[in-house]
Image (cartoon, rainbow over all chains, first blue to last red; front, side):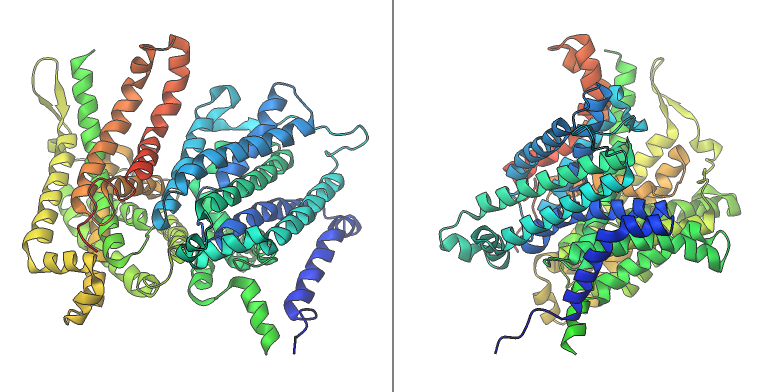
Length: 325
Length: 307
């Protein structure tokens, strides 16, 4: 007998979460808390990046420790044109996606020749190259970063400078990206990617060129992450090579694992919990002992260790187990 | 080309290479034997420097401070292994990366709690703080010579232990087939703890050696550990010899690239382009080298024999 996929705790939780995200601007308006809208926007943007990483890491088994580079590249694809007074948002998005995809194509073609720890390290190495490239571009601020003086411009009448408008652009983008990956995972292409993770030799014996499939997955992932970067550039209005440092890539991996790898809603849970922890821990600690919030990295590191050691399957896995009781 | 400058730069390259070797040696053994990616290895580099700095000031003796700091750093490494690292060996690499990333956060914050945010300067005794005059134009700072000698001494010591003693034999055997070593009745847990703690101590020595020059600071290990990973990948993971050669290559290329690349580029570019391109390319050089080696010879220059 086929059991229903609906009405499990995970499904209810996911839908409730999406609904909550859909009405966040209204809520933040009612309670007059613009701050929460800002955090929620960041959650949406990083979730797009996390979903793109989750596809290759979770479903494809490619542990990329360099995905922050795509966010950085996407952000600079907004920053640099605006610096030269090219304000068209369509241009920015086009650049962010194509430059990231190109970077992913070149670095992926080399990286995917390696496996295991070598793949982790070579993706990190390419991200470091991008980091140092932007670090040395004095014209665009180098180490000090680059301030983006105004936002990308789309149609007249749409003002993405308005936080609510920008929030909904991010929200719609997230839903579209989730849908894209939902279709991708279920497609023949997605099956090959998943098959290559569980047994590469078998897929090759079946006649699939796993290398080519992985490369395409890597390029798609890079392009989507670059798009998230373009949104991030518009969100922060200040970008610096710091966005591409290897610790940023590490954080992105943590978000994916925290939520639960190879699950549709895992990245949403992961990014949400990560950012809520990041915002709340310092405040909670300050409440307990004044000034203690400065050291929030300590409990954060302990939580990270705890999740890796004891929480199998992240938040998504936890919700699954909840449903089986 | 200025020969005095060239000699100084060669010396700097050698010094960086030696320091990288001290970090990479432990890293490559831990990875080779336990199959464990330890991003937090750089934390021992930092902890060693801070412990040493405190002891040097407290005891008012540089040598005593260093000698006491080494076993203390080793103890920190041992505790880390027993409490955390041990339960991770059988997990996959993704878990290693995440867990050790968490360890880095913990070490950085605890160091911050104990020693504060300002960092620490380790005072050098006068006899190490001078110059050695080689010729009229060439003077070498004696402390840099000391770093290089200590590093070479540690390298020689490691070579002796790994290739001539029974312990070293077990380490090599563990690197090529740990199940077999276990089946032959060796307590593999003790061996793992020992290797981990020794690796931590050697990384600590590197931190102690560099901090009189650069000072000790929070997160000082996090950048250099990435370079140490580049070294072990270039050298071949699990190989001490590879770590040594890789460290010297990376140290030299990085140092000489930063000082001479602009002059090299000027030979076939106009001055302005060369001057803007040189800093970017020189910072990327070692990563480019690693990418080339991984693409052409993924097992590294000196992969350990048999698996």
